[in-house]
Image 1 (tube, rainbow, N blue to C red):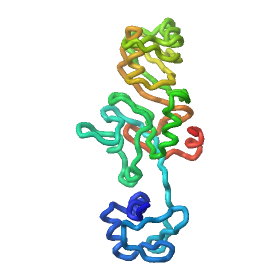
Image 2 (tube, helix red, strand yellow):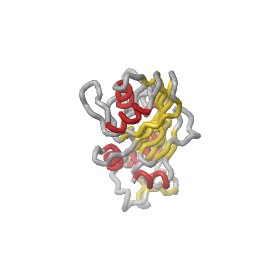
Image 3 (cartoon, rainbow, N blue to C red):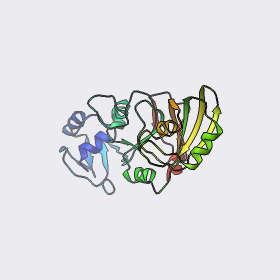
Image 4 (tube, rainbow, N blue to C red):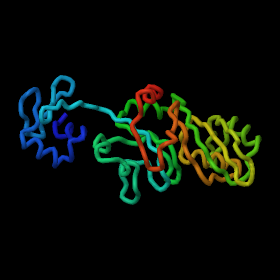
Length: 234
């Protein structure tokens, strides 16, 4: 890895800041001053210090975000604000990406990481990782809908979904429900309710696998996963 990228990722400033730091002679690799940002280092075998302080290298970052409405689950977009735009620069430097996606108008739990292997494990259809949602529904949700979701519903394009676990929290003209599904088709929750002639008016993801949204996170806020939470995902 280039030493300028390492230092930027570890929070020593922008690439411009790091360039100045290197030129000042404050950076050493195994005790030798290094001024060239292109210098390649082995993070497992070599020791990097800044003004005598050892740089603790981290390869991966794992972030839990409470995604707000109006923000898209992408790394970049010319038209809309993305979840990456909500990150502090020192976290964005790790180049994380959203694991899966939440629709623009959907809130809730979103995992961001640069660990491609973990992302693959969570998104693989073979893993059947459950995702739990809370939703407000226009229309009376009934036990018949619960049974329909258990059996899998047929979407407008003819696709039959895998069984979903639907729990009714409130049943009236504006129903409230929780739903657990193991798939992630485009607009799946909304389309499942459309299949039973109802409309989702509010949607929030609460859980992904064993990872639960931190209730203390305000919309748009995020934090790093704890070691315990990371263990739950693996």
